[in-house]
Image (cartoon, rainbow over the protein chains, first blue to last red):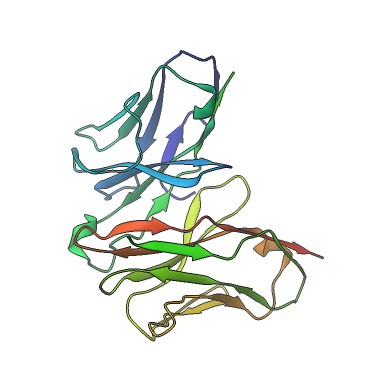
Length: 119
Length: 112
């Protein structure tokens, strides 16, 4: 158990629907990252939050949104789902803001992932 | 821009064979380099890292040396086990925001 909890583990839904993926970071970690992993595109960085604020954006579609709450858990909302959104979605956390460059910088702890299947 | 290139997989080895997974990078400045491993059905986990040139990261029998002159960070293990079967990702972080740049991953299968 990495200490990063993601729910649900598996989710099957239909095109056009909306889903929410949830992530609880490891205790003490303030940064949360969302990644999408698919067979054809590999590991894609979506977005990062630090202590409730958005810090970096990657290849996140406009149909997707995320937020980090005061208790530091994070949610990734995926709407108007398409077949191509089927993928593994990983949440990761780290103790430090990446810009600080300290010993823990960029050492990410990943959750086990949420597998989304869009039919 | 910054990038990481890993050798394509899948790599298939017999138990106790020597493993090398090549990783080269392009980056401005002085990046930190990482190897993460993803076991079947699990998330990625840090395997080892190196933060400056000539540093050697090591863990669980795996090693990688930060070679600035060849911009490489090849992963090696002297004797692989079936339990090493996984996908291995090379990554770097650089720049003011130290954003992580990932390779595409190399799948390793070790047969008994």
